[in-house]
Length: 278
Image 1: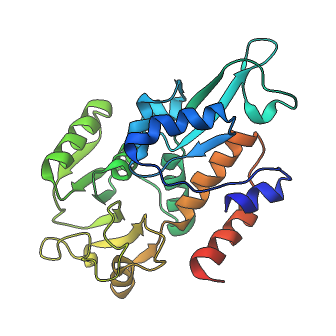
Image 2: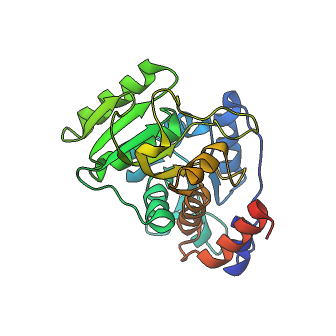
């Protein structure tokens, strides 16, 4: 996706994947800075760790409490911090790492585009998972007034901690730890259940039925159809995987690095070819 987008923008860049242990993350960020990388994307489990490892946090990273995108910057002749991509000649002086979060906005945009859904007062949302992705999703939905939010996590204490944070930051948001008894508008899976064939459903069928919802969004995009999505379609729900969210978080990252509008159609085609083989 990123390499297709960069090529379409005429950028002489290359997007590469690296396996980095959590203990080595700080050294990896520092190494990328010293080698004058344009930027980085981070995935699980690095998004929370990176909060303490970058030199500056964008408002998005501060608000959602996670970093999934880093842009390397230097000062121009006027002393202003600018993206390294804006320096045509040798980069002057010191370089800093600035952290951003593109996941939150990408989620709500994907929900609108893929399922024609947005948080509304009175709507009910069941959010499965209280890890990094679940936390960002919960805070973003709460910021937009998601009605009643039900939080379910394998470790109940983690869901309760997330509920307490939401109540503190968004006092008007109604949050309940546990399953809804009645209908909800949307179920969002932010767990890893579904990544592997044979995984259990990410909810307890004894406590919740997909007949209780109209829509299901699974943040997992590979496999393209998880067990949850198969069950959702069988129950007559509108359902979508996380490809749209991946597209928009990646496109926003490319815009942050390049200061150019991302070629969404090109990037979507590259994603669909990779994930769906078409």
